[in-house]
Length: 264
Image 1: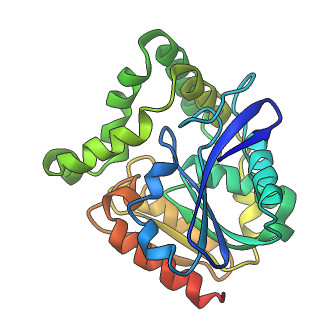
Image 2: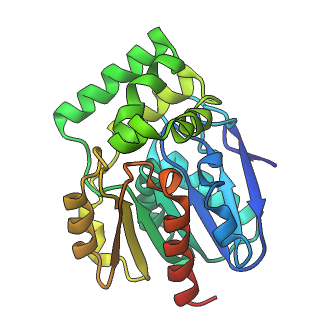
């Protein structure tokens, strides 16, 4: 399905029936990132799976893909589907977008799953690296970028011995073009520091991530969980930044147990 949001068309998919769960995928993937774990959730929940702007088959729009734009897209999608209050799942940049959504529309949030993400803004060095990478993507193309980022997104075990998962990860990235990838990198480079907001999160929250996550180490996940009152923490073995894709049965089971426990 397609939704017009400001200057872009957003592609999204809805699966299952029940209480609403909105899932925001990581960079540079698309909504198919969630499909391996969807069977654990869709018998009990209605899953809303958008392609974030600039990725998958959603449009790019003008300028950087800021977290404000992503949060606004999520709000319009919820309004379109008549979702008043939902559980939200965000992986990596999906989590960054959810911090922005929380600041603006927290009354729409029933629960949070923050997966392989972190509240802090990039360091000066990190911002410079993202901006440089955006230029490189435009020069060298999306396939070059995919090959560069894969070792950072998947665990060493997956990269060396689970070639089917490696190909699956690549497939979730190949719908995006260079302009969308570059716009997302620029938007992430400029995101706000959300650390100060953690103590204000007063809905059930699950912090979840892979034990081999290089961009978001376990220490970062532990720190974030400590900062959110009452947050739960789950670390998934044999998984990296793409834990949901690498270990969909374990991650799907953890998410289902959490979502069922907080109430339908």
